[in-house]
Image (cartoon, rainbow, N blue to C red; front, side, top):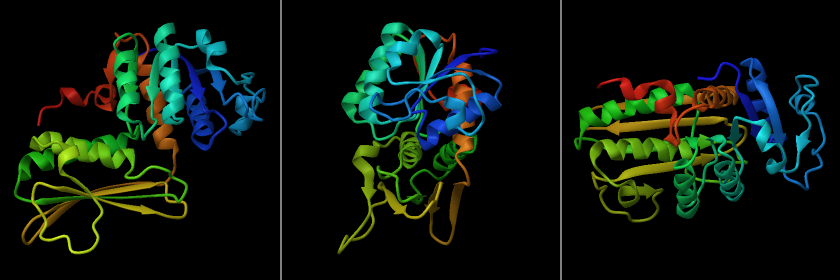
Amino acid sequence: MSATPRIGVLGAGGRMGRILVQAVQQAGYQLAAAVERPESSLVGADAGELAGIGTLGVKVSGQLADVLNDCEVIIDFTAPAATEQHLKLCREAGVAMVIGTTGMNDEQKAVLEESASQTPVVYAANYSVGVNVSIKLLELAAKVFGNTVDIEVIEAHHRHKVDAPSGTALMMGEAIADTLGRNLKEVAVYGREGHTGPRERQTIGFETIRGGDIVGEHTVMFIGEGERVEVTHKATNRMNFAAGAVRAAAWVVGREAGKYDMKDVLGFNNIQM
């Protein structure tokens, strides 16, 4: 972990970007760059003032390429198409990345894999420490219950979220499916309507709720005959996601090229179950 990593924040004028700028400052690290879309009216503004923490002397740039050499690591919570381009730039420059963008397609994920072969990349759908502890608990529950229960994932987010199910819900489903030796793409069921017939034990169900200002709630139910176990995580603000991403940014600086996740950052892979 770098003591004082030079961190760049992409999408710095957005809701998550502003919180990431706050998190970098709270952690005592250096905000080396802040980037927005070239056409944004926020280009040229002070990133600290946008984030509500006072002047930092870091002007928002409209081009990542113009500030990339100032950074050791980039945090990207933008959009899939933008992240794909950012990956290519960071790969060429040898700059580490922390990516929280969700909704990436297979082609974009392939670019991520290729980039991670040349520069270190942390990729996670959720950087909350609590969420990642929950996923570890889900793996344990899946291992113990095996094929004796039905599994349902319920997630809720604010009305402005554009992808469904959430990346975190899918991450939870993938962790469970991998533990059970299933392929999530083959067993996932996204909502139910009409005459569906009896539930198949191998499936993993997903239900999505969108409304209001819900930050993020996820519940996984392991439903057996006569009992059920529920693992729930509720986020009440976005700072926990930002703080986790900044923690990952400090951790990944100086690592060998490769694709990492929050299990690596938090040392979970060293915990035996």
